Image (cartoon, rainbow, N blue to C red):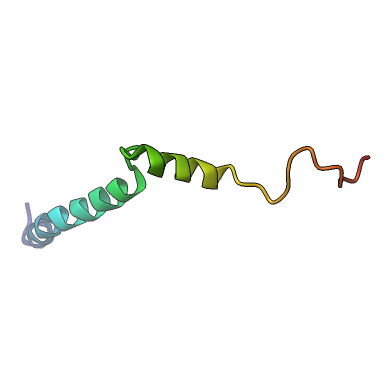
Length: 63
């Protein structure tokens, strides 16, 4: 290994753990386990299925 690549390699070895922790922390924030609390799970489910108006609304453009 020539002196230039050895110098670069030494710096990369110091940065690798920091980079790995950054990637790991982003992954852990994105992938979350389901909530253990049933009430909290129900509330989250209601928010995701909330609609502005009912499905059977007669106010539509086709009829």
